[in-house]
Image 1 (spheres, helix red, strand yellow):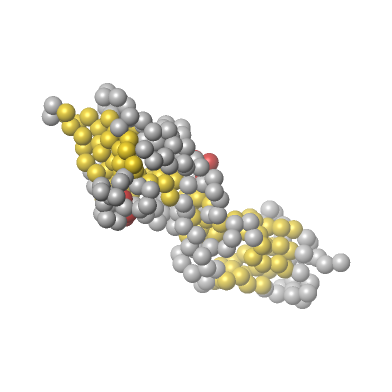
Image 2: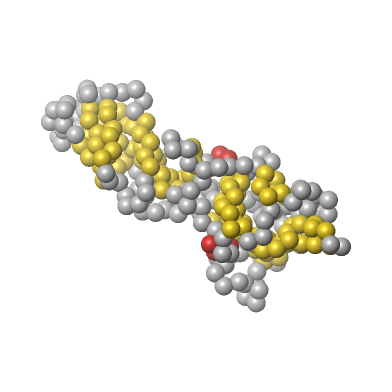
Length: 244
């Protein structure tokens, strides 16, 4: 059996788990897809990898404290499970054939002012699971679980700036007077920003595809700027310098 090592969901395969072979791989399935017959808690309680997710007696996915679930509704297969927006998290979600789900460790998520959540890019210790329910499992005309397919995925980069990089530096050499503005172009796409001013005298205003910054006093400080596209975010820095 081929093992899959996941930074957050360390492989701990239960009975009934099998990797996809070339013969049973469904067109459109991502590389590394795993098939699993998940028996509910009354019939063996198969765990979904190391996520802590299982199916209860009422045929719901239950995640407990290990991760949070996002139900994405009906999709066209595992390859179509795309968390373009992570808004309503839950620890319990109905198991429905043809539906897609995402499971994420709570510590990997950041909440933005819009109410949407996202995961940081460029970090090897952050990933998530895409889950697709193929069909219910039945025995003696009773539903006893579900056949699922799942795969580990990393948050998309979406041309966001590198995590931890400095994207703008304001100093006296390029900032002549306090009512002057300095702009930063945002990456293409539906970008949400969250600027942390730390109570300093700096203004940040968005106009179209740019952020405009204006200092209200001379000081040296490094500000955090969070940018989100879809399920992904980056944390970058805007620096205000006072050169010697």
